[in-house]
Length: 460
Image 1 (cartoon, rainbow, N blue to C red):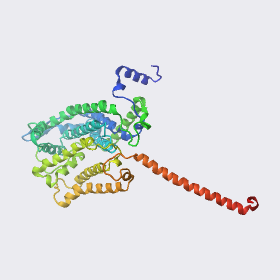
Image 2: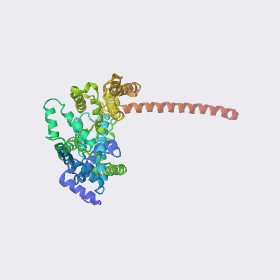
Image 3: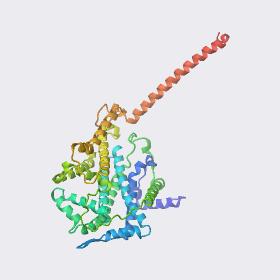
Image 4: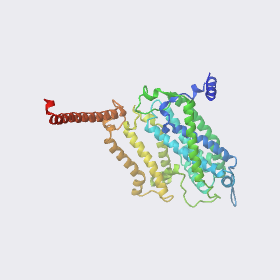
């Protein structure tokens, strides 16, 4: 091991004695370098690590205690958060980084989900990777839900109390046991401690176990999902890049870029502790945080009110189950989104409706029910309907319509979408070449005519 680079020598020494490269650090395809969408999963892991560090510093001062008294409440949790933000050096910066980092982690995980669908990364043999990724997404949302209560301000208490109450509508033993596990004997006194324990102990353990299974057992077996137009037996897939130095340096640059953006946003827009909750009714319905607004709008529907709330909850859970089981629903052999148009259009319509429900939640007064037929159409039908119609029209006049022979369900065509585009470009080049040849022939004939007029003896 005669290496001029001391870091490389240390790296090889560790590899030889631990088998690290054979376990979790196998070389990756070269096409993943400098392609950020291949690194969305890694970026989500980076955000989780940053959350761990910022959360650790907050735990040094945070006190998860709320005591209800006959004369009001002693909200030590809010007081500790306010102390961190106003008194602790750089406390406001760290608290802001923790909140915005949580937002970033959710947004990155969502983008990772969208990307994996559109490139077909859930198909065989990556079904288990998709399922584990969905479980990680659910754990991330649970992170956000349990952490939202911890500041114990009016907004966080109001949104969290609604979430705990909704759990009681679940059918069977789950609806009886889960709320008691979350609330405890006194709400929110015991609830705060339980949410804190779930947030800092249980969920990190679950996330690390699932993440380890996804990376160590599935990702390392199949690697990154490559470009959908490239054959797995040729092209850039055959070129591999070792983790040291290129992939590790790229990961470090990505982490530093994320950290810089997070620091800038946290410094420019510091958070506050909010209004202290001191007990009693809130007086008005409070929207949950942005990533859960859509659930509130779904349950505002008149057909999900009263005793039918459980139907709305089960409908949302049903959609999540369908997404988890997507690899077993879409078993077509195609990867390109344009070659499985039906599911792509429906998926895009669902994403559009998710954004539409969130926008509606912020544009309308809190707790305003959706009851009239016009409101129901606008809120729950208009956006997906428009997306579906536009998707069908675009598909009808796209090259994918020819490749799929007009079929909506993904059937692998005789040649790929890339080959089709190459053929079209080749035809255009051929037409231009023929036109140039024709022009050159015409020009040569013109030159001969002019030459004959100017030099008649030469032509004779």
